[in-house]
Amino acid sequence: NAFGLRRNDGALHGVPRRVPVGIGSRRLRIVVTGGAGFVGSHLVDKLIGRGNDVIVIDNFFTGRKENLIHLFGNPRFELIRHDVVEPILLEVDQIYHLACPASPVHYKYNPTNVMGTLNMLGLAKRTGARFLLTSTSEVYGDPLEHPQKETYWGNVNPIGERSCYDEGKRTAETLTMDYHRGAGVEVRIARIFNTYGPRMCLDDGRVVSNFVAQAIRKQPLTVYGDGKQTRSFQYVSDLVNGLTALMDGEHIGPFNLGNPGEFTMLELAKIVKETIDSSATIAYKPNTADDPHMRKPDISKAKELLNWEPKIPLREGLPLMVNDFRNRILNEDEGKGL
Ligand code: NAD
Ligand code: UDP
Ligand code: UDP
Image (cartoon, rainbow, N blue to C red; front, side, top):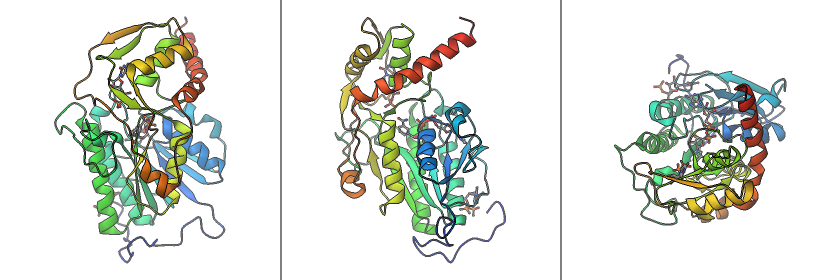
């Protein structure tokens, strides 16, 4: 490989090539790519909290040091500014691969899903680490099956505006399974459905962050199209518990990780109004191209094999992100001298 290192070619299917760092006296050493982002930083909190050593790799494309600042100085925590599109040499037991420009305004310009995933799989192959890919419900495209099961192959436009993300993640899943079958890398695949919570990017254009920020700023809630399209929204702590259950379990996946509670965008707007500001108004805007009409996970597989299901319904989860959003919006305004 790029470092001229000897490969672990003798590895058998699924058998670690060396004694994992976590076995014996040493603690489990875990890499989280994209760990300075929304989901990643909550995952890192859980891993540190349960006593793991954590190395975050992040280029701060959408992530922020503020999401991890409470861990600075913790000897079990390391933060590396690095773009996963470039190779990196580390010794680790597990890799949670989250790095990805994950929202419409960011994801169009970046080969992270392909090159970054390849490098992290190369790292897993060399070290014998277990590799978990955070894929997405977007691999189902604009689905013709509802709700979506893991067996559904998807309805994706390969040349559309969203395809860099959809097809990027589909390629990442392919690479992951190829490294598993071809090189014996232990892999896990999660297909994550829309997730929300504190530390979400403020202005990356996702619907929950948009509505919550708009309600706090006393701006109209922007509903795209007729607002009848549906999504299923999962609170971030439920997702984090699903990711660790998947990594630590025996099943490769793919697994849908999402909350089956399904809402139209108009229903979501109503809940945001009830939660934050009952006087908030709605402004209709044109919808984006190829917007999926509906999305709802079938999570029977994760329930049965991972013993996992989400616990926090939307009406309970939304209020849990409001203070974080208020504080950040206030800080922004102060920064502008308002
Ligand atoms: P996020 O944007 O908050 O986090 C992504 C992180 O990856 C950021 O910290 C960013 O700086 C980092 N990153 C991006 N490109 C990088 C690169 N080339 N090298 C190193 N770091 C890089 O997004 P998130 O919502 O926390 O998403 C995390 C993962 O979960 C992503 O892979 C995303 O596709 C997946 N996912 C999220 C959702 C959701 O609703 N939040 C839904 C489906 C899938
Ligand atoms: N890689 C990495 N860190 C490692 C091992 C590999 O970043 O510890 C990168 C490597 O540079 C390559 C990719 O992962 O670009 C795939 O590695 P692999 O060994 O599978 O492929 P090869 O180098 O043989 O093409
Ligand atoms: N959406 C909306 N108003 C916004 C942002 C998004 O009505 O301010 C809609 C968008 O058209 C889509 C849904 O909300 O139908 C979810 O969009 P998001 O980008 O959050 O997630 P994704 O489309 O990736 O599921």
